[in-house]
Image (cartoon, rainbow over all chains, first blue to last red; front, side, top):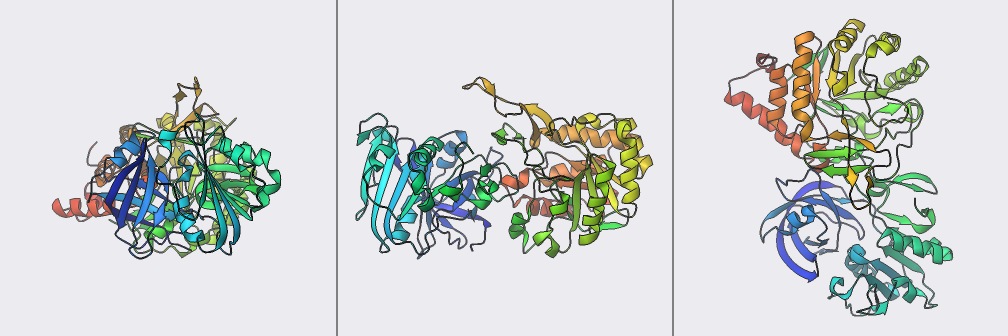
Length: 254
Length: 293
């Protein structure tokens, strides 16, 4: 189990990877050793915002200890974060949450990502490579300009859908999922609507599916009780008990 | 930095504010404990699921919450990692609605050797339980609680609207050992896209920087009326607010929602107080407590 820390990290790389989407690479002042699917709370020092914001660990380099987060410009807090300059420090808390259940995973794996829900999967894929016999990534976005373009991994089958239809299939990424391929494990991250549609369309797959959820949260560690969800086994908190939950535990509109 | 109330020694004047600290956060303070006391999340007699919908929202200068006292009920309470905390008192926070409930809180305090209690008289997020502005309406309940917790140190946590001379006199006369001011302030927000309230329950509790000057006035008011120790709460983000609260007459000062965004803030605050004392030749906080009247 990883120990959560409050730490500082220097920005060492920043690039625009899609419309309103930046990839930021940091060198932390301590070893954080996250597991795939965990998240970090981040804010700039002396931020004008009261709370940190949660970001999935997009990638982690075991050799250097560097990590990446994928930031979509949603509000002034994410704008403030992405205005950091090279060499400047950023404040983090983490690594937080449980991560995807990747232990013992083998066979055919499907990844379903909607929008910025693609964020945790670079690190997940790194961990899966060499273990899964095949990996299919289903990636949906509103329109082409929001697709993270470098998302053309070797050894991974990628299926793209856009609402506008200007790249890949026009419509939901779930339309592409009807391939009849038998998956041993399915990992999801994306908007609530995508997850709910998946649960309704594929109730029989819930037993082998895990979803990373998002919710409003103040602390990221389980203190504020702000990220409550109702599950089949009672009330859970996204930050402390998740963010990854077995889909079989989830309730539509929970 | 030491502060004494009712025979309890607090190593620093800093406490956590109820609802902002859980055992998960102890990881941040493994090597250094900046708090003189940790006030736990409020527990009720019966378990409470709390409210639904959006429960937390950042606003300019603060934070709105509509948690609604989500807790497992006092009978299910477990002290967990807090049992290993050294150098800080563990303070039980209780919302008690009926005399019959008091015994369960007493049992829990005894079981874990808890010597201090903060009675939450002011959570704004409970449906059907309006904050009682005039405490004379629950005089009997308050007397019973203090009589059951005769030996313990008991604070009463009030909202801004409850800071009235009559209430303070009643609490002092009943034997309460301190008053905590102020709890979150009832507030609301609107989603202009949805043309609706942000929170399902419409109203939420406001905390954060915006509360500081209201809470500071509350401390001043109480010290004008009574000698009862005051625990200040609201808008602490640096040692400056702590010093101001102490100058207004506070014995202890709580750090609340600031901890969410910056777990390192309590260290900076403790260091800041020490530096201020050194620079100003202050050896004991009593030298400045209540100096501004």
